[in-house]
Image (cartoon, rainbow, N blue to C red; front, side, top):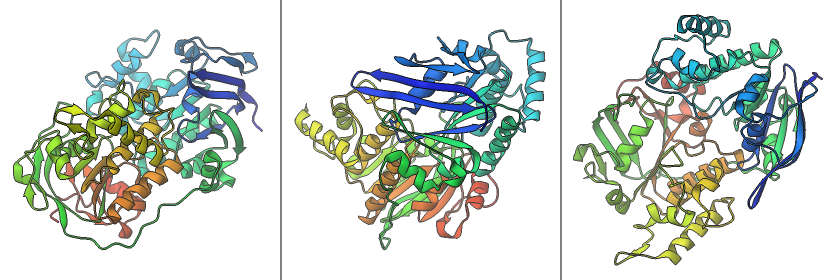
Length: 505
């Protein structure tokens, strides 16, 4: 047993209508990589916010090295040696690496001195980084390095990491893990949050499992199977997605010579894409974040127009049609960004159901909205996709990220699309919910729909897709049968290695 660095004692935090954490207690040892597991809405985010000074507990206490610890704000937590790498990067694209890091420091040194420290620390921990490169030109993996180096410059005693591998290739994950193991050997404690349970097994020394805001168990990940950990998280058996035998039908969606300029200086243009997707097929599209995934979904959904014949549905040109017309024809989509793009944060779930379901669910009559039917539609989504919320009148922003994701995906699937395009369908979603979403996509394909799943989760793509293609700098690789590929080969394709020639399918 390692000596405790941080002791949590009976932490409790309640919000209107929900107890986020209820009497949570556990210790994090010095030089220990400690996993914090739990399904969506289990209370993980609230707990780490209390540790980092973003939220004040209603009751309970913490000890840091045996001394009472109660940070009033993140600045106080950082002063006590607590650092955090958030799931969503907080970087300015127009500034360089050193300038971004300086913004997060209380008393930054001269830029030349800071640049030298960045180089020294990045090389010491195997995370090479040029302090003068503009952040807008960095890959997702390099941006994460900026966040990590910013934390390491604080010489932290405890490093909190929230879903750190969600935007990394397998090769980049290996580099990150080597860095974290080096930190552990130097005595730094790491609190690691992830839904990728095999990664937890490979990296973490100990795990605490939360369910409905309570500590329901501890385990040693290396001695516990991923399935057992998942079932401890959800409190019941875990269903594995099953493919039903299905024959592929005619071509549903045909993309030919599709090129679209970058939407902004920091966006990615699409370059001469060729692709076909058949009825009953799940096509997986992988790629490291920032290589054209958002742009591809925008073009297929109609948010960005293209040449009319560059996108065809059942042989008919639709490239010049907008989102509403495409939805009427059966082309539906769910973007990666949940709040602000897939859902309006301050609108209720009923209103959000109306936003995309009005056409196919017949929720408008002679210009008037049919609210009872819209509410019934929202209630059906909540029930069928196990969305944890008091009711359809709650605002979208009141849901945890994973529960909002279930609502967004369920809203599109229940509209019976002929073509469904989704970006990161299970991002930030626990194992049980992820399995349910993947099964819903497989069932949709079994009913004859064409599904394009854009994802950075390689296990997901291997599990559900019939063919796989990689996006790199806006170019699409030749799709290949997923069954013939290994995770390593897919990772190399995502990184821009072999097989990136333009696909002609």
